[in-house]
Image 1 (cartoon, rainbow, N blue to C red):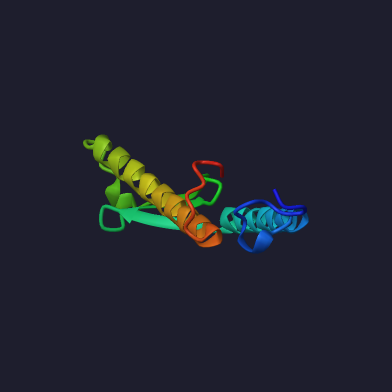
Image 2: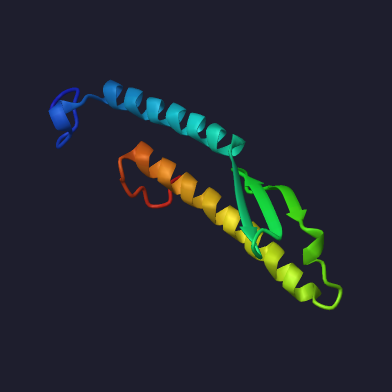
Length: 114
């Protein structure tokens, strides 16, 4: 191996430059994670009867149920609408996180490292 560089690295990138690049990527990822945690994602079901909002930490922030959706004879439908709204909001959060990660890594598949 050539002194100060790695075989096969573009432009003979040396170890110090590579470490600097890794540290910058770590900082960028931390910043992205903090931004994602502050975002909220909303989904509705039942024609707006149930509205769920989650944050980037995958915590339910709010849940609104229209009183018209409450039918004591059909509690299961309300339960299904709540579950569907929460799951859809969670999927939106996951999709946004995956998209942000893909943009940061330039589409590299990092094999579940992050």
